[in-house]
Image 1 (spheres, rainbow, N blue to C red):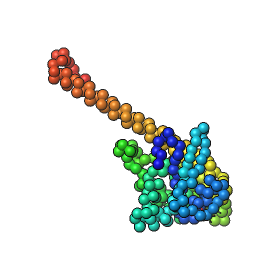
Image 2 (cartoon, rainbow, N blue to C red):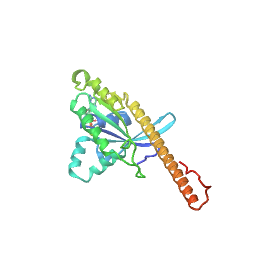
Image 3 (cartoon, rainbow, N blue to C red):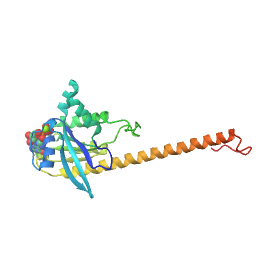
Image 4 (cartoon, rainbow, N blue to C red):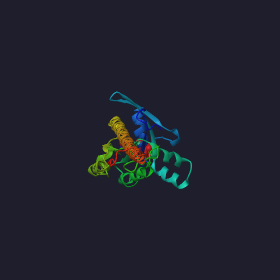
Length: 240
Ligand SMILES: Nc1nc2c(ncn2[C@@H]2O[C@H](COP(=O)(O)OP(=O)(O)O)[C@@H](O)[C@H]2O)c(=O)[nH]1
Ligand SMILES: [Mg+2]
């Protein structure tokens, strides 16, 4: 998987309980019409877009929480693929249905924690991430907005408050229409770019701190070496 800022091919997991509209979400975004069939072995579906002059190839994969739980209890097979996407994907669409309170609770109580649990604690050079885990972009999306009038179970304000408490954007939509799907992808792409910028800045700070520490050490060694060889004037103060 691409993890560098040079590449604009990124991986996005659409994650949620069964029947919340994951398949419809991906198919409406990519094919502009909804189907209701998706098989994990289909692999990625790619959404290509251009944002502020940059090309993005967002590869979407659907993770069904029920399949995930089942795979975890069975070991091997699918679980390796699921773990891989949870660990290395750059973005997540956290999907629930506004007509199903349980699907919202799954996202807020379990799915989000599950993602954190999977994220790496150190980079490729085995250096720990300063805030404990590798960053990821995420948006909270409530589906089936067209059924809000007769069947809403999840309060919009409650969902919005939770999303903002986690620093993510929140949308409600109907996955049978295109609505804000493209805007959601744009939010994710920008969050991914921002995360990579922060990662890069932290990396630079780390390198600078290492260089400064090396300079300090080599100055110390050289003073000791010079003192030992009698090359320093008498009473020369040791540098701080
Ligand atoms: N009314 C309505 N039905 C939806 C919406 N999104 C999905 N569905 C329906 O919900 C069912 C499950 O959708 P699907 O995309 O297969 O869910 P998945 O299991 O999360 O992939 C299907 O019958 C869809 O047509 C929506 O926004 N509005
Ligand atoms: Mg599906």
